[in-house]
Image 1 (cartoon, rainbow, N blue to C red):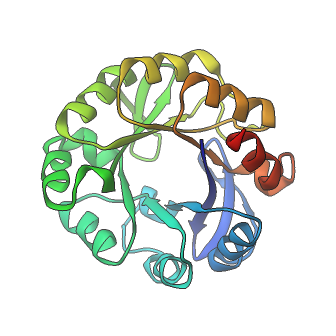
Image 2 (image 1 turned 180 degrees about the horizontal axis):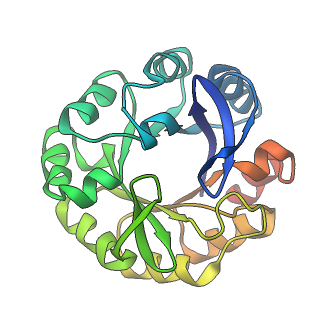
Length: 237
C-alpha cells in the first residue's frame, strides 16, 4: 500500500487544519521544506493540496506548488481549486503526476471523461469527500448526494482512481471510520486512496486489509502521533 504525506498549502505555507476550518491552521514551515523532509524519511509520494484554491481561486499558491514539483523527484498528486479543464491542464502540463478533481467533478462530471481522454485515466483522480454519507463540495461547505453513487459515476466516466476523505474524522487524530471506507472500496474497482483520521499503524494496517491502494497522512504525521517510517514499514508488510 502506498503512503502519501500531505503537504497542504495555505497562503504560501505548509499547514494542517482541523475539519477543513482555516481558523484552525497550524503552520509547519514552507511546502518545499516539508516535502524534502518527508522524502528524506523515505516517502515516494506526496499529496499536495492548494487550500486557498479550495476556497477561492486556483491560481493561489501556484508558485510554491510548482516549486515542490520541480525540486523533488517523487510522485506528486495535486488537488484544491481545480475548477476548469484549463486549471487541470495547467497542473498536468506543469509536471504534476496526477490531479484530484472534486467539486468540479460534481458540477461538470463529463470533465472527467474529457481529461481522461486527453491525459489518460491514470493521471485523473476524482475526489470523494464525504460527510455523513454524502459527498461534500465547495470547501466541504455543501453536500450533494450519496458518496458511493458519485464514486461509481466517477469511475464510469473514466477516473483512474479515487481519493476518499471522511470529513467527519478528518484532522481529529482519533482514527479512521472503517465501515464507510470498506463500503466504498467494495463498491468500485479502481484504486482508492483514503484520507481522514489515519492516526496509527493500526489504521494503516486496517486500510491495507480493506484493499485500499494508499492512504494520506496529515495531522497525525505533523503532530508526531504517527511516524512516517512506521507507516511505511506497515504498508510494506
